[in-house]
Length: 79
Image (cartoon, rainbow, N blue to C red):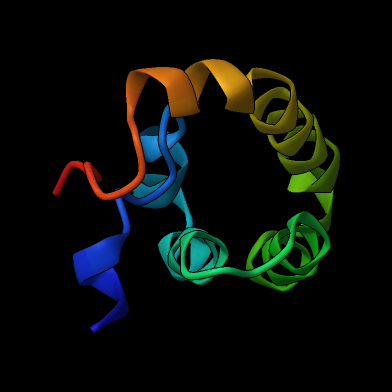
């Protein structure tokens, strides 16, 4: 059900292929989870050496979110 409203980890699909569980974190975030919940979920889905990389990717997401929303209005998620 949640997959129908999510476009996955926009810009970071390569991470989804490397680590199981990352897409689930992104789907929960797209469904209304906070950025903090996304970080918590990623921390549990990734090995410790990847936590800093994930935090950097989330920071990029937050920084560029206004541009993403401008280009992809709500309801136009790519499947």
